[in-house]
Amino acid sequence: MKKVKDPPNAPGEKEVLDAGLKSCSCENVLLSFTVQEAGKLLRVGKSTIYDGVASGEIPNAGVGKAVRIPAYFIAAKLGVEVCSLQTV
Image (cartoon, rainbow, N blue to C red; front, side, top):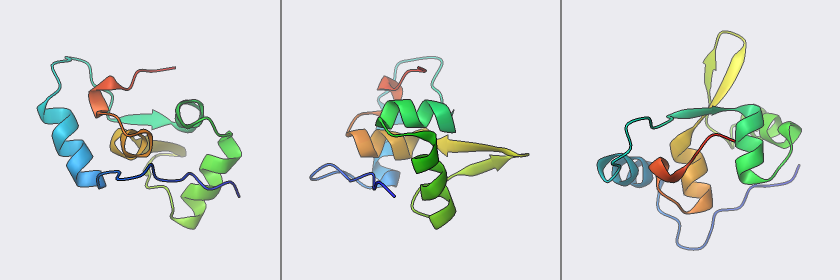
């Protein structure tokens, strides 16, 4: 499985979520992404995302049979604010 590595000096999940949402002036902030969207943002395949979800490496929220990846996780991996993430 291809690991999604943390960027150097990456803040924790809670810090990213708090900072990203408090400083965000956007009205339509996505709080989660589909597996396909998360894969595109992180530049990995869907199977890598599913493997990370299955191993517990990637936090997720199940909505019925669908899997959603929290925006704070993707923002932390990319080293950006949550509100800077856009749908792909």
